[in-house]
Amino acid sequence: MFKCEDEMFELDMLVEFVKVTIKNVAQLMEKINDNIDIAEMIRIEDYLTPQNLRCIKKLYSELGVEDIVDAMRKNPLGTSPFILRKLKQEYKKWARCRCDKNKDWADVYKKNYRKSLGRPLNRNCQDIKNSS
Image (tube, helix red, strand yellow):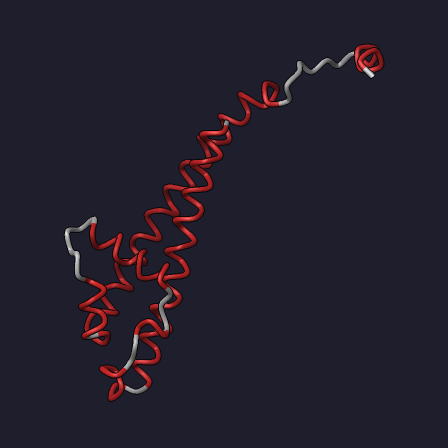
């Protein structure tokens, strides 16, 4: 059950990191689209947290692209739409995975519920009174 809880936590954190990164990249794109003239002057660090940048870097390093954050700093107008699209794909993938895993985790919890209580469950009231 502990392994199951750890997996749930890790997957929930990953899904939330990607979700927040999508929101922040969308805000960056909105700002750029509002005033295209200032696109090169925008500092992506004003819109994306270090956590967001790590999320983007991790996603693209899995694809073999190591310098995506540098490319984003140099050309946020050109790279942001592609990054946003990839983040949305990744979010859908992980959210679907979480739904599939929830079924498996529910089975694990169902099978191990009684064991997790640390003592056997007895429906006999007399046993409960005797143990108090």
